[in-house]
Length: 269
Image (cartoon, rainbow, N blue to C red; front, side):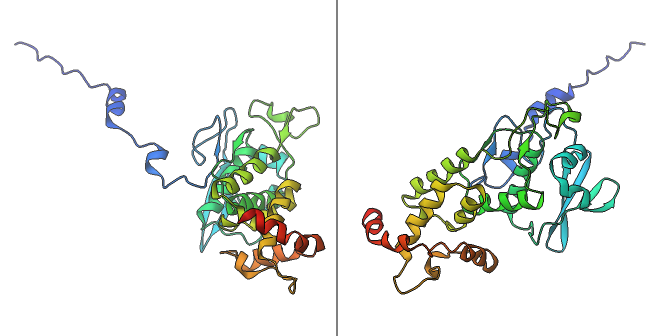
């Protein structure tokens, strides 16, 4: 009896290639207003080369929680509050986010970006950022303990956080400053950018004097000689808590600000 010829199995790799699997870029919502990290794969999928993430950082999202994979050693060495975060069991910890909720997409993006820096991403492209995203990045940075440095993923894990290890500043201030001036350039004037006054908090925290001056130059357009409060028309969609923090900066307490009003109004019209 003649034997039946066995059918060749199709190569599964070939099938996968021809099937057209969606990438994150194709399947995710718009990436507008999100900076990207160069030399990296998508934020929520990426794990820096040589840095395994076997622990979990949990944050609140409404009545639920969001989970982000992290490396325990990196979090211990770079973000001191990690040790005080509530242990949920196993390798999960619940972050104390100082009231920050992650139901907002910009807040989630901010956390992803900061965690990527913690795990060794040294170059962040802040192009297409928004004032709110930059503000959230600094909020996340604050409740993670204000880390001052990051270490390449190639650094020996035992050397991370030690004096002998090579490191980079956690934030490249020049890149952030350039991003903010680009916002103003694209919108023609900074005050046309949504929530632009949040940049006063960003400038204050990072000591970006050129950015603070840019904010003041735009703010003086809304000032009145008979008032010393922040003008409501400059508020946009800024929440009460954040608005109070901006007021605490006393931006219009400087007498020189009102003196600039006439000159600046000529420039911006």
